[in-house]
Image 1 (cartoon, rainbow, N blue to C red):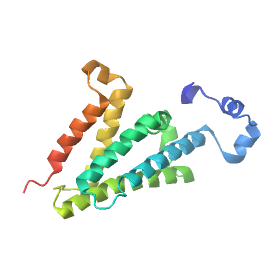
Image 2: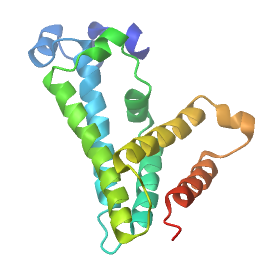
Image 3: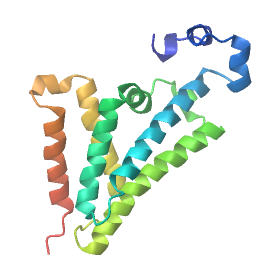
Image 4: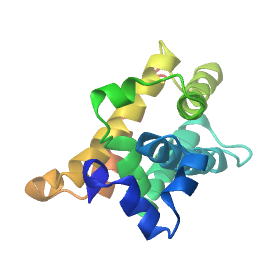
Length: 183
């Protein structure tokens, strides 16, 4: 039914609970959405942490593994990806940043971006990369991957006859070539 067309009554009927029980745990439908968003982000964060946990990995290998982990998350958890990436809340609902769940989501997102930033800083320190601002670059990489997945979700890749996997591999190669230390 989609977010806008789903009612609390529909949700409670599906999970076989009373509306009164709903209000013990949640204040509104937005909170359920954000809890699901947090759950998905938590899965993604764990995939990122697992991807870079192997000893003796270079920064380049870590970025490659992070990319694979995000692709794996996208492939294995399409509903969570959709909740995270294709937000269907209204602009006003999204602006709410004071609830505990909103703070948790922000913290998890920052943790994921920090993992990427730390890899870029590690690459700078090891001499693998020349990244002027690792924080900005981490955000650019996040936007790039989200954009690749969005192209596929909107079926734009059908028009171009490119596979998502090939497009990600080629664009990652291009990005790594751009940040590689040439000296």
